[in-house]
Length: 385
Image 1 (cartoon, rainbow, N blue to C red):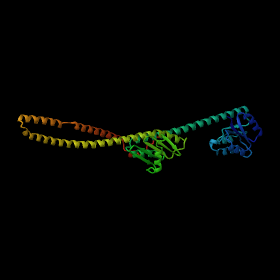
Image 2 (tube, rainbow, N blue to C red; image 1 turned 180 degrees about the horizontal axis):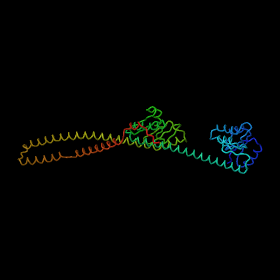
Image 3 (spheres, rainbow, N blue to C red; image 1 turned 180 degrees about the vertical axis):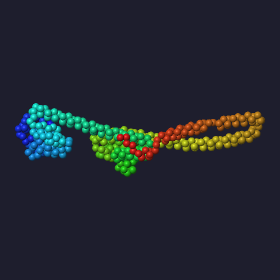
Image 4 (cartoon, helix red, strand yellow; image 1 turned 120 degrees about the horizontal axis):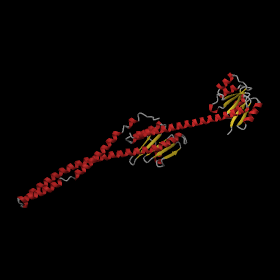
C-alpha cells in the first residue's frame, strides 16, 4: 500500500523532479505555500512531508511549530529540504522534531533511497507502537480479569462464613456492588424464598415477578440493560449490565457463570445444615419424651407386678395347696414376671437415639468452630489486585 506524502515547495522544477522520483513509491500531493500545506494536512493523513525551509508566506520552521499543535497520533513526520545549512537553523529544525534535514543540492539516488528508508523506518515505528498498544490493552484486560477472578475467589471464601440465607444474600450483593454492579438476588427452597435488593433491601413487586418468570429461562438470560443468572436455588438479577461486546460484559458473564453455581452449592449446604440442626432438635425432644415415658412405664409396671404377686399369694389358701406347692408357684410366677421386667429393648432404643443426638451435636460443634462470623468478614474488603 502506497503512503500519502506531501511535497511543500514553491520551486516548480523541484516539484516535478520529486514527482518523477517518488510517484511509483508514494501517493503524492503538492503545496506551494505554508497555508496550502497546513490546509492539506487538515484534509489528508500523510506519512511524512517534504518541506522547504523557505516558503513564500511562512518559513518551514513556522510550519513545524504549527504541526506540533496537532495530536501526535495524527501528526505527520517532516523531512526538511533546503539550501540553507546554517547550524542554528538546522538545530532549531531538529528541536522542533523534524525527522531529517537534507541540504540542497543532493545526490538524486542517495536522496531517493534515503527517503524510502525513512518511510520504512516510519512503518516499523508505527508497527511497534501498534504492537505496544495491543500489548498494553491485553495487559489491562488480563489485569481486569484477574481482579474480577480475585473478587470472585474472595466472595467464595466469604460464602463459607455465611450461616443463613440473609447473610449469604447480603454478602453476594455487597461484593458485586463493590465492582459497580447493582443487583437483586433470590434464594429459594421447597419451604422458603428469600429476596433482597442491594439498593432498597426488599425487592419490588416487579423484581419479584421477574424472578418468578425468568428463574427457569436458562443459566443466563439478557433483556435490555439487565441480565439474570440462574441456578436451581439461586437467581441474581444484574440491573446495570455493561454494553454487549465490551470487556466488562464478557468479564461478568465469565465470572457469574462460575460464581452462581458456587452460591447455589453454599445455599444447599446452609439448608442441609439447618435441616440437620432441626433433626437434632427433634431427636433430642423425642429422646426426652421417650426417657420420661420409659421411666413412667417402669414405675407403673413395678407397681402392677407387686399387686399381682400380692393377690396371687393371698389366693393360695383358697386352692388348698401345701407349703411346697405354694413355694413352687410363687417362685415360678416371680421368676417369669421378673424376667419380663428385665427386658431391655426400650433401653436399647433409648441408647440409639442418644447416640444419634450426640453425633449430630459433634458435627454442629465442628462446623461452628471452623467458620468465622459473616458479619466480621464484611468489614474489610481485601483487594487481591
